[in-house]
Image (cartoon, rainbow, N blue to C red; front, side, top):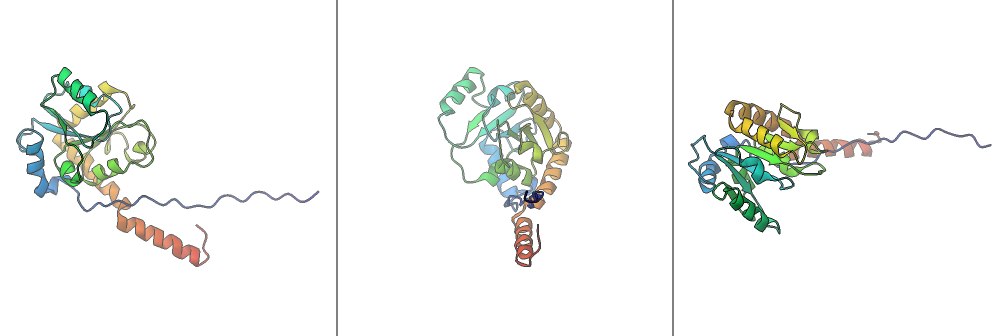
Length: 219
């Protein structure tokens, strides 16, 4: 019988997603902070009003924010759910606190005008929207799914919740809006974490990988 040989172990190296990070941190984005916060309701120096940028609408974001006094919700983009969301805002008497901003190209401005990033998606790969919020120095309340939980450790850069845990999202959003020091600490952690995903860092990693392969080195 022919001699059997053990299969070789697969050899690979993971490459990170590259991200433009030069627009963070949000606290220093003075060009956008005041106008952006004024646009979405209230004076930008009024700390009784918290801005929550919703990264997705897979749970009832409006209902999650409704019990939090002074919380404003930002929705970006256009889609077939807007009419239903507008109705829900009216039904919950939230019309003046839910802002449908439409298609936007000024994401740094919206990040600068926000206090918390909420991303209750049902599934993810490696979520670029969340990474951009982290790079801008925002704390995040995100669903506990793959991709999201690769970036956020509970209590460090934000909080993890089951995707449809509306009351849990309410609790974590309210906690962050009530505690500027906690927001600052978590936001700074996120900004530092995103440095390894910068375009410069990822390009250096990819260059080293290809040079190694050309030199005959295995990953």
